[in-house]
Length: 343
Image 1 (cartoon, rainbow, N blue to C red):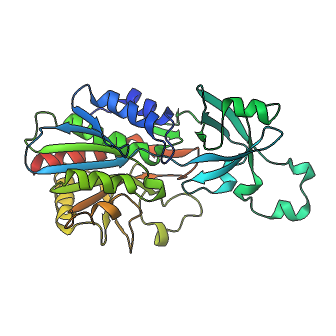
Image 2: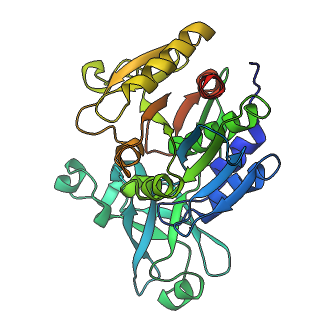
Image 3: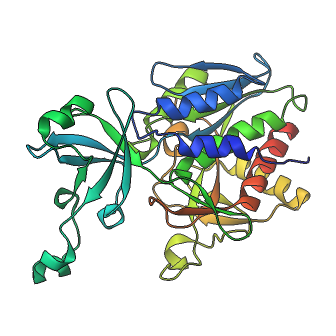
């Protein structure tokens, strides 16, 4: 099953702003692409659906979350500076000096994350890790009144970091966690056209970074016979990473298949068999009480949904410079499509 990724679609997905709870810009890009070959819809929660073969059997749900980590404005100071709260899991050290794009009242509003210059930091401040409450956003406003003309308390923002291709076929960008998942499930659906009689539904889910709430809604709504969740996984080869803690995933070396309480054994067995038959390299990852993915909620819905977890190795997760190898993206798409086609 040959496959060539639609890179313009991937780049549009990555450029879209979609912080947890405010994913509309990203899901619109997903639906615009999906409409070219599938039936599309949204639910009240904000999940975006693309469907092949309605009424076919079995019914398979493919899920990749569309949200990314972001910030929400909690206070506007008299000088026009914005105080922020996190949407998702941040390391505040990563935010220092970054550019942000806010979803403003009349369109995009750009800003930077400010902090006192090193020249004026006290000795104890230099040694202390930065906390989010130490940081603020500067959108260039002269005062609070001008800032409030463009933004308000509750306005959200994301990192303003466009995709950049590195050496070879490696891509650096914000939001690879987990627009990659949303991209992979829709590309697998595209590849399955005419190759299966199953009803296959690709879902760009919402609010994963704050609790996998969208996946729970989608799984309850669709009641599939089985589900496959696509996410990202830490690359274990970069300096300072401990494989005993993060596992054996490595960029360009294949996809990651989860073993654990939320990974159905029969689904995993089938994924491994297809991967080995097709020559798709993979590594196993063991999760404990939680996989940290949408699968944790999907597997518990109704009387229980058999769920598999497929992940892509990723470097520098939850940062503006997440890095993925395109070869692993292609492998993930092919493995999903081949597995579903064999059901």
